Amino acid sequence: MSKISYYTKEGYEKLKAELHDLKTKGRKDITRQIAEARDKGDLSENAEYDAAKDAQGHLEARIARMEVVMGNARIIDESSLDTSQVAVLSKVRIKNTKNNMEFIYILVSEEEADLKAKKISVQSPIGSGLLGKKVGEKAEIETPGGVIAFEIIEISIGL
Image (tube, rainbow, N blue to C red; front, side, top):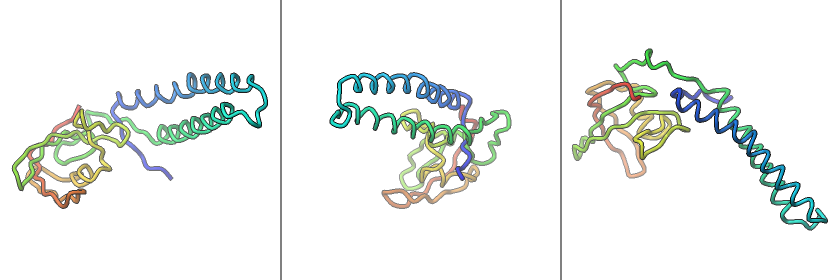
């Protein structure tokens, strides 16, 4: 059983558009590639045909995975977000207690994560370590570089 993932309306629509594109344009392109390869002759020794059929298998597997994700996707109602503790779609200002550096992140689903946009996954070490924490609390987070302690400075709605 797959787990529920929470999305912004924008993230959900992007996922939906990508799935639609794969089902329409993606399948059409693969069908064209298979037809072109088939026209080149003997299929038993046709590397282009084998590659196109392999690409078709990968495309169908990706579509199947995305359909599962879409089936378990939920859009979060921003008006119901609670800023008393860190949750999905929280914008969190944290401070590294060792060097006093501050960071601001928005916690999102794994598919919406984008470090350049300061959006981190709730499944990431930092994201999961911050979940449920309140302003003033400290979170000791196991990272690849070792344990880092962060203090929650501020929680707001991340959109």
